[in-house]
Image (cartoon, rainbow, N blue to C red; front, side, top):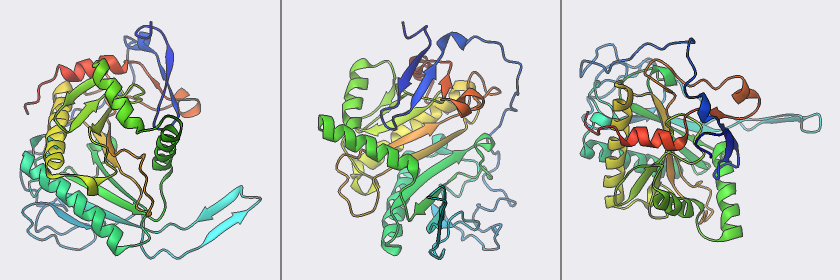
Length: 342
């Protein structure tokens, strides 16, 4: 019944709902059509402010790096020396407070033309090792840091200002609301049912099978039952981990493997460099145990039915609740059919 009938699905990680309308998947489209993007052709771009040896937009010059390269964002959204201040008026209706933080950029490779599916497993392992180091060093350097959010915006459609392979790291003095919701829902599940929410969910997904896209000895990528974006995926470790600091060498290697294979399938789906926002959720760095929190990654790609047609979050989505046309099961099947060769 659910494959053909409008219905709601509840996101177990946030408590929010998504409306699924599978009968709308065949509706005609006369709206905005995106231009197809192509990967950079050259391994070095003299105008790129992330390539080795080049001057960045802020005036600093990059070293001639040969692997990963991390630096403070020249135009950071958060500042570590923001003064403490708050405004609270009208019985809390008017409320603001300053926020300290640090924004970092990590270049995956000196090669301007590469992307995650085209990096080697060894190169991706180096990226993950950098994420581990950055998480540890930010917490040690800034004791007030409570959350480290690592994310990649790939493609112009997702707001990437530069095609050079890179990601960002934002470290906050507070725990952001999206992560806080996930923490609260996982703690609630543990108190009511015992054990880890995502461990139980992963066991169920592996038994069901229809939303699993790829798996390896340490990780599983699924289109989550409650997915909002058309080809959204959730990458979950088989072992209960709280964050990058818990990863063993084999888990690092297999995380590189599943990232490379998943993004290759994305690229092959519509034959273009697939745009997405990807990010890892790890437990807060606030000294708490957070035993119920299960480390994971989200991939949110916007493309809907082709390289030229994207999903828009407008109208009903902005005023009521998220809505999708293609079912998560159909999306997973489409991804399973794709090649992992790039």
